[in-house]
Image (cartoon, rainbow, N blue to C red; front, top):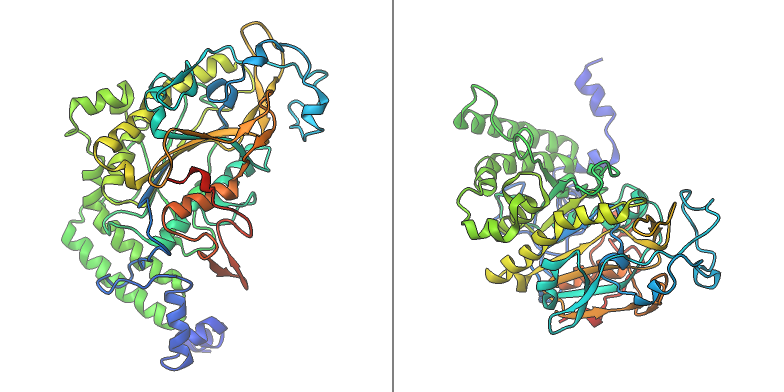
Length: 487
């Protein structure tokens, strides 16, 4: 049998409608090319570019920089001051406080749950009087720019599902990441750069911390054009971006034009929207051959900028260098900039390890806030800092006078936000005197996601995508905007 004829007999229902030239086939093809977007595509957008959506209401923020602290920072050693714990040092955590909470396998077999007060000093800072640990002297200087949520809580108790939950709104892998949702919903302000960029750095506190997976900045069931692009710290910032040896720009342009024609023919036959994604990504990569080297060349930054971000700002792959790169990405209209910093999982030797983590992150985080404010970008840039859950007030392992560890704790922890749409200089929510349970204004992960989308002008209940017969959204069927922290 003729193989081409045989292939035509195997076409699917989607392929049948996609190959129809008019009527219902054309309508179906239009749906495939622009399915579920709430905004109209730009009339000036080149063929194959991502449609740019319009916000549901006027946004306060145009972009997000998310400084994700992977491993879970200890809230009572950094932000949530609990002086009474010093009087309770080494005493048993009351069962009336723990209330039979689910434990991890790492502490479930412990005979005791002794209280471990923070060994670090706290002081109030700024006009807001925010309590901060001595580990965060630079963050203390920008305290009045920050909004601390001390009543965050989540459902996951282990790292991978908890990080996945924060990034995608679901504990199981397979959903689109928050950056992919924003890329899908709003598109990019710069056609020469991705709408969503991810950067990863390793902490000095716990260099062998748990790994991070590329799916954390993936697109899930959204078309793959909306996934994050990971920038590397060594070699080429983006893999396979440069032309192969012996191929000049003119030759590359001709190759891309020919491939676009072939892909367009395949799309006419199959109607698969991933083919248009392939065309668009080839074109974006071609433009990034010019935009990425300019973006990552920090040699023209003034010395005061490096002084602001700290001594590691010139070292590629460090958190400081990534914070500086995040500011440069924000200046160039990238919609969602995701930094992951590993090393916060301190089950043992917490005092030593957390000091290293704060040395990595304190100055660059504060510098980013200062730099954005000085450049007039903080008003329309939302900055988020936080991990996947908190840490226990009781000690994991052996408690000594100068050493302790802490296990995972999903019931309460602290994050901070700053910039576009957020009230500055406030603390929202409260935990009990043991820093174990939320007692006022609880904020769930879905609530945080709804609030981030709100700052960008998006109604979280209306940003949806139909997959396998159901409309999905980042907040699933949950989430309330936290109006108390909005400017």
